[in-house]
Image (cartoon, rainbow, N blue to C red; front, side, top):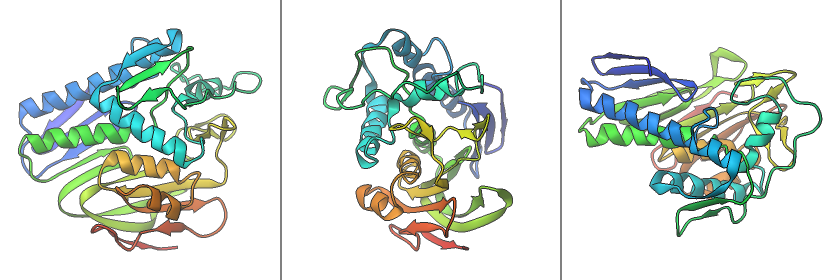
Length: 298
């Protein structure tokens, strides 16, 4: 993992995105090592872009495997998303993404025909036993929560090292603790503009947009698993929460569920904003719940 480490700063590429970690004080060398090792371990299990991962093994052979605390936390959150969105968010959507061209080779050219129906998620994950059971080969994709969970893991490593203020930013998923931080909500079609701002003192924000990770003729990574087709009616979402995984999950859910329903269903989420293809911004909780303050511009 190539990286740049300076006083209180780490920058590197991992899991397909750019990471930046800022702290006011130096990051101990052992902490740097633990961060890079934790990210590598996470990628080795959950990446569908490498042939030696657990996800790739399940895609080839299926099976039943224990997933540990991190996997259990993610799969429980994904199950909550599956229920909240009536199946629109489904961790087994990976094969549909690959059919459309978003595969390990980054083919970015759809295969002929329609993607196969996405398998049903019900019964695949057992929370009491922390076990994932895929009876037939299927491609798992934890993208709706995975990057957020990894941001939380890195933030926890920094906290355990005694670092009292830090910002961990992984390409749109950000967790911050310490002095209040003012964050702009980038306009999906113009990076020089913002649609609003939020202030976070101890929490996280996630953003997702259909103009990121796009290819071919308007295809993108945000699929409705019920139809295996890209979402068209919503172009961008933002969510704040107590953790980056919860913010990531809420930003994913908002492509399919109104912001007020997301906020009501997810107690660890503090605000939700989305931009429809047509019409004004839609939001819930944006003027502050649990210390989050914000302003929308339009």
